[in-house]
Length: 427
Image 1 (tube, one colour):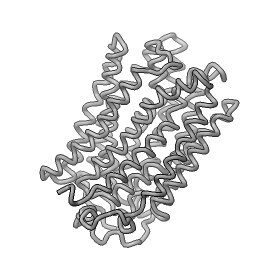
Image 2 (image 1 turned 90 degrees about the vertical axis):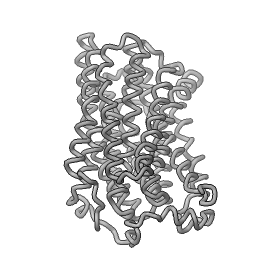
Image 3 (image 1 turned 30 degrees about the vertical axis):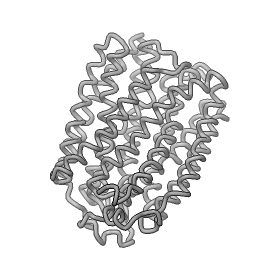
């Protein structure tokens, strides 16, 4: 059956996967270069947290704007604009010569990178029926792990052979290769000549979505009056900062706690992000499997998300880890659970909202997640500087792991309060 229907929609997922991989390569590189840049520019943990906040603040603002823009100009043009912007910003990091200039470059990078997820989620909503969306989202979202997986191998090699400036420039230039394939292979289903009629019919097989994409624009005011919007906002706000913490501080945690040399390819980081990749794809598959078994969409998503929230809880026991591989197992499980959670929470936007509003909703929720990502690094930086001064840096990380362990259950509870059955929004 699947052979006769066609599989072009999975080509689209491949394009989204590689774009997301590049997005996270450009984002992750500063965490791996942190010890080198700390030594060169005399950064404290607070200095570094301020640099991280510049990225997340601009990312938050641009998510709101990009989500709206992509709903207006479409995925193909919007994604291309986003990638060109962030790739140039990544390259410009190689020209930074002070803490202040790094803050500016990170802000520019955040402005461009914000287009990735609103564009990708809208593309999935356009190209997949509901029963396949979580799996498709999980696959492209695995690019966040792949980017973070490649970076610990690629970046130290470039750093060792050329230097930190060249690391930013070389990695930043990769996006322009993807842009060629995007222009060649992406169109909306109605305009894609490579798409069979059977596959087109499958893509548009959700009866409740028929006739929704009528071209009418949806205002932010409308969206903020809807409880389902607030469910998505709080789900993102409480859990996105945990991923930011792992992304920007995990290399430093391994370096300071277990004496990992970040100038060499790091096997523990590779293993952690490999586990997270499995979580992203597996998380998307689980709720899709429930739907295939006949479960209502809302029950499938919420059951899967509760399961993944529970899987994060054991990370608070990382304080008892006596060697790095115990820490890798616990952190890897938490990161896999986050990615599984992420694959499903993104899909709830297209479950609850018509396609013409999906990018705007994802932008609003992404902005909320980034606001949490602005505030949480303040806590992280102050906490770690405090315990570093006491020569008890591990205690600071242990407190942070406790916060991580409860965030997802809290988010699930609030989402259930605002959208108990994730009812379809009528606009």
